[in-house]
Image (cartoon, one colour):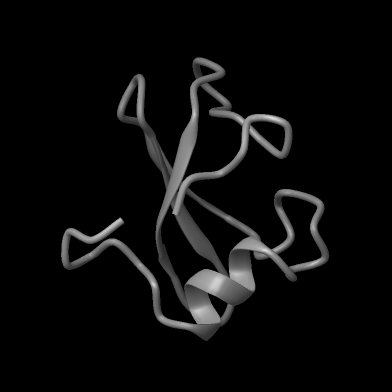
Length: 68
């Protein structure tokens, strides 16, 4: 799932982030531009865990199997 740039960007280069995995305490993001990946907290994008975390963790929509 892509993170909207208004909500957050890569801490290294400012590129667009993609959430590639989530568990009960963290989300793993990867930058589409520099390839850096790192863990963030579920509310890292200031949405109260309602947009990104709920969709990725709650619905199991990680990109581990290559989907979008």
